[in-house]
Each structure stands twice: as structure tokens, then as C-alpha cells.
Picture 1 (cartoon, rainbow, N blue to C red):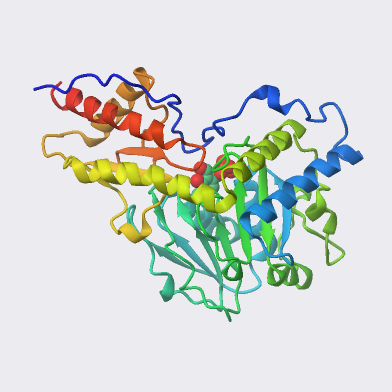
Picture 2 (picture 1 turned 90 degrees about the vertical axis):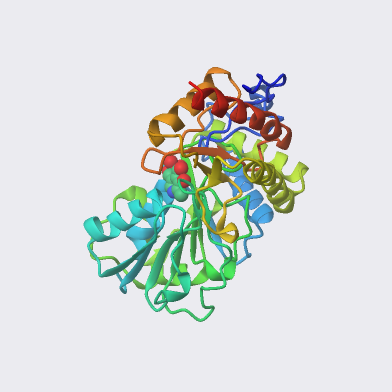
Length: 379
Ligand SMILES: Cc1ncc(COP(=O)(O)O)c(C=O)c1O
């Protein structure tokens, strides 16, 4: 018998993995304090930028001796800037288990052309992080947004490493515990877990990363937009809100709104709990339905933000077409938007579960997934 159309819809059908849903209390009218039309170098602008840095430090628990900067071009800008400024002093270990990590490998191997060893794993799997040479610099992604596989913890990274660790944490920051003592460079974008705007990236540097910046000059030229040092010294202003070029003060205000909201739900602990609860609702659904599975094979590495699912029913003959049709049905019903798997990833669905998503919305959406599956498999 065909499954009946569910009666209730999620209040918010936005489950995109980036830009991610705004905090539930978001309203453009609440950004009225943005100093629009004012210089970002005026006192009011500088104070807002510094507040964005300090709020980040407090909520994420970033150590006082780590530097936090707001940089151009979102997470990509922050991570590229770090790679181009720091790598080349010693060989690199490049780690990838999905699309974004693979992009960083390409940069290092084909663009920077430095000596590098590449470690990869298929979608759904993770690289054995204990098998790396930490005397080299290590580039990796904490949460693979396109495979739904994340680092379980930082235990594999030695405290006494000689190389630097460069971590793309864009879909992890504000949803997972990050072991700061194991991370020399950490980057993320405002558009991810807190549902901020794209445009700016955050670059977090350990004292060892700063030491490298001040003692090593790459063999290649660096454009102004990547330059973190002047005359062999760190440009300290970048880490106090004196951005390299002009930021969007509207995006800054929006980020400050998001950090305020994050505090209101209990800060990092509260955000993690919300993401975990959202993911638990999906886990329950997967356990109750034998036609759907997580792409992540090991529960210990399953993401609590970008939850990736695959259809396992034997009757499906064209996997990609089937998954696309399900995503379309969910979008057409306005119950789940932007939930198709990433273009380079295996066919399936990707449902964002970060803290800005309400668990009630995940719970209201899942019966529609069962309904859409039933309708499509019988079509
Ligand atoms: C792991 C990872 N790295 C990098 C990016 C690129 O981020 P942005 O577009 O904010 O630069 C993304 C975006 O989804 C991502 O998930």
C-alpha cells in the first residue's frame, strides 16, 4: 500500500550544506546596527571586526596565544592563503577523503609543485591519520562536507610534531570539538555552521604557525591578498580587525548576530548538542528503513553536520537519476531544499544537521523522505 502524504511540513525546509540555514531567530531587521556606508577603518567598523574575532575566540575556546584573522574569499581564501604562505619549507603530507580535500591536493601538487605524499580514501572512508609523517606539514579537512565523514578526534596528531598541521574546518567549527593544541592552522567560513554570509574566511594560527611565517619566505610570489607578513614580521593588524581589504560590514553584523544566537543556545556545547540531536533523528530513520544507509561506513567518523546518505534498494537501476528524483520531489513539496549529494560525490542525499537546524524540522522532513522514496520506487 502506498505511503500517504504526511500531514505536517518542516517550518523551515532549508537543509543546504552551504550557505547553511540562518539561525532560527534571524531577521534582516535585526542587522540595523551595521555601520553601513562607514569606513571599516573608522572606530565603529574596527570595533565590530574585533568583536567578530573575540566572539569567535570565546565561543570556540581558541587559546589566547593563537591569532584569529578575518580574511578575503571565504574558507577557500583562508585555506589557500595558509598553504601559499606556509608550505614549501619542508615536504607536505596531503590528505583527502572527499572533494574539498582533493582540491587542496591539486593545489599543492600541480600549482605549488612542492614535494608531497598524498594519502586518499574513498567517499565514506577516512585516511588512517596515524600513518602520516608529522615531521612534514600535514594538510587535511576535519569534516568532509561532501562525504559526511569526519575526524573522530585529534589523537593521531602528535603533540611534538615538527611539521605544521593545516586544517580546513569549515563544516566542523561550531559543531565539533577541535583540539587546538593539535591544529596549527584552522580555517572556516561564516556561511557554514552559524549560517552567516559567505565572503569572509577565518584564519586561526598557532604560535608555531606564526613562527614559520616569520622565519620562512616561500620561493613563489604572493599577491597582496595572501600576504600575512611585512619585512619578515607578522602583520598584527590583520588579527585585530584591520582587514587586508574592504570587508562587508553587513556580513560582519550578520556574523555577530549569529554568534549572539550561538551564545543563547549554550555556546559551543549547545551547538554540538543541537547538531547531534539532528543527526540522531536521521540515525533513527536509517535504522528503521532498510533502503537507506549512511555513506560514512564507520559510525565513529559520521559527521553531525553534513549527513550524507545513499539508497540501497535492489530495485533501483539508475542510482544518480533516482537520488535526483527524490531530491526534486522533496524540493517540489517545499519540505527539503538543496539536499542532493554534491556534484562529485556518490549519488544520494546530503542533509545539513548543523546547529541552526531545528530538530523538529528534521523530524518533520523525514516522513516526507519515506513518502518520496515510496512514490519514486513505485513510479
Ligand atoms: C570542506 C570544505 N572546504 C572548503 C569549502 C569552500 O568553502 P567556501 O566556498 O566558503 O570558500 C567548502 C564548502 O562547502 C567545504 O565544505
